[in-house]
Length: 424
Image (tube, rainbow, N blue to C red; front, side, top):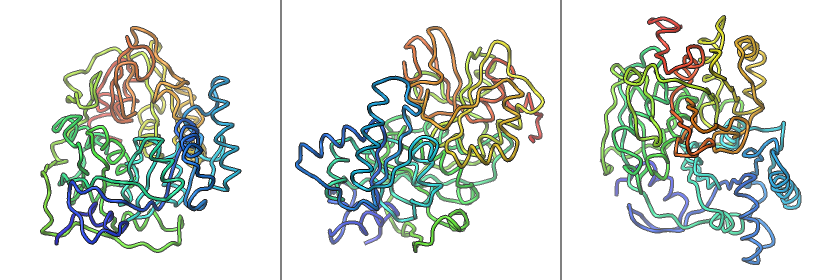
């Protein structure tokens, strides 16, 4: 029987003889992840189950990132609980100043390999599809079961094949590709599905761009977003891991629920309007809207690529006096690299704030909350009402190119109007 890439990965992790979309099967975990929000809840559920130990400490990773650094007593207590539990059980633990945002850390530190199954107490665990893995977010009770038993029940998803052709135009990035998908199928169009990205345009994307694409698959309701592992993947993993892996691909005669085609030659910078990631329009239709805050960072768009794009726009320019800009490297690795490349100096000279790696304002936690009546443009993944602070504030989603251009002009602006039509 022919299978899609996602089906092949799941089949390798179950004792079921075969599977098809809609089947509910037990799946073995290669890695289980939680953070300072989801972890403590999962620990409590484990205790209620009577589970005293984890299935394999070497395959469990805890990352303090959502409220890092702690913003109040309650968040400090959550991180203390995460820290103490991690030390007690001997699992991998990334604390303040030693890691960063969970999905960036696991990819950059070599935990993720093609063909793996990763469950995480965070919806954006789908980011790991950038490396050809099946990553899926689960609730804390299910994560408790994964911690104790190393497996979970999964409804086998169908697959939407996204065929990407052509070469990116100036100021177009992975963010625009996934926004294009969301604009076409909506925030429920991928429910019970995996988004698989193939074709010459997808194969030419860097891992950073692939991370941006895979990260927001869940915004379409998808279980995961995934790129077949290839030469780009091999090059990225070189020096990060010496563990063996093999590249899987969908069979030529596999059955797909739907096919989408994206031509990068015609794709332009896009913006998701509040209050939905699926409310996507070309930048020209919203140019001129006033912006009070620019936020560049999160688990997929705080990469060195994003910071370089922002620096290209901000170099020798100033943040608009009516706007504030917050730059958040996604990890300590990225923070250090940006420091070595002089990017942090560019941001500081421009009048931007540079934050320690943190989830921060992305999920409405801290370090950039919006007041009533304010509007922000962010490289984050959600712009629901109240997501970044007041329920009377607006959040627009866009790439680092677009966000940085807004920082300079104080309004939504095509980056070509700041940097020049030909790009950097």
